[in-house]
Length: 123
Image 1 (spheres, rainbow, N blue to C red):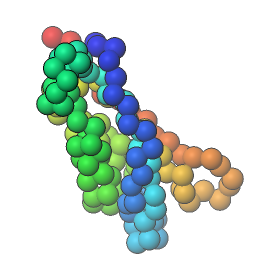
Image 2: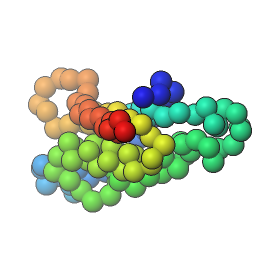
Image 3: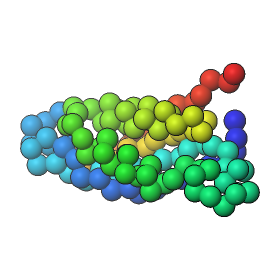
Image 4: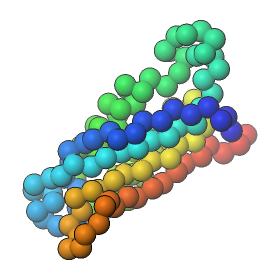
């Protein structure tokens, strides 16, 4: 696996996920962190965005997924993001962190995060 990485941190998305009716009704902010392992040696040589993962388009795709259909579990959302990222054959692996900083927990806390990763099988 390549050691080249593209990281997108702190992507803020307003969405309506949660097991409680008020979460689906009122919505809240979620934050996404992505790390993609890829090989950007071709892009480094060509200096052409077509030879790499366009992180603006990546952000658009993630926002569409996270702000899409409400889900009960953020585990479902983070998995959908990871699976979508892996559809690009240039991505060797991905780690996705989905933060729910306003989770309805009746205690003082900093953040709730769910994390998943996907890796392309070696061929």
